[in-house]
Length: 349
Image 1 (cartoon, one colour):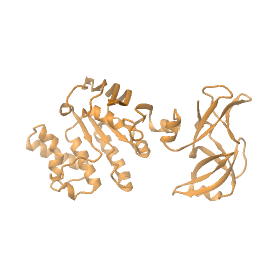
Image 2 (cartoon, one colour):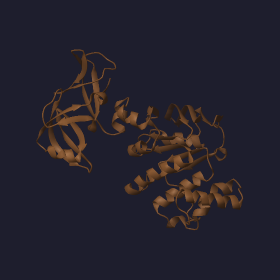
Image 3 (tube, one colour):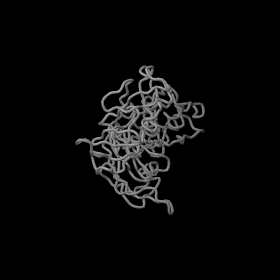
Image 4 (cartoon, one colour):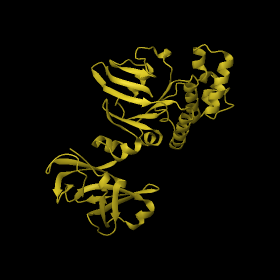
């Protein structure tokens, strides 16, 4: 069953159109990320789903019901904002129970559900604390508890981790995902952080300038991007320009001092194309091997478990990622030999 269906959404602010014919579906219980650079329209989609913005055209359907014209307060949707939007003068319990008060629930029911929500986000015993006395990670959990306590059919998360430091953000990625899976709620998560999207999502919807660039599960989207934008936004790729050539029945791309094999998909010999290869998708050896290209190492960057080797393949600069333990074999000034793996070497017209 599809919990959420978005049909033909278009939205403009004045003369600036920010969404162009957006269509997607979300299955019940899935965690879906809207990923893309700032200004691509992902938060606008979230606000339209929640009812904070009105689309120029299109429909929002939740559990089979068209809620496009339903007022925001009558949509059973929970939302966690980027700045959490908590009330600083209220206690933790009153913040969490705010939506239940608006819905005129009894004190007994509010207390019961607030306690349930505090236990869910692992903040039991903090109901009387002031919001201003909490850390950023604790405030994020309170904002999540407030969104979940009303038992929404859909949870919307608008970059809720962006204000946290790196270590806490990484911890909250797993915590958020665990909570979402535990209660099985359909979740739409807006982020510009590729790692967050890859770590947490069942499906990623990659956006660019108001349109959906690609939609897929994280593994397929990362390994098989369908455009130069997707290749370079979701993990950095080496983008090389060359010509499509056919050699003894096999297809390749020939560039400025290099030639790499590709799986043929379209075009004809002599076409100008762009090749996209991720740094970890290179085979690298100290000695020449069949099909390999010379790689002159100009820099070596240690980043922890991964080491990046920068250098030239032919006359083009590329970056290769290898396990740091293997990097001891390669030094600046060395000539190594490399070849992209055929199945992950993509070219675009």
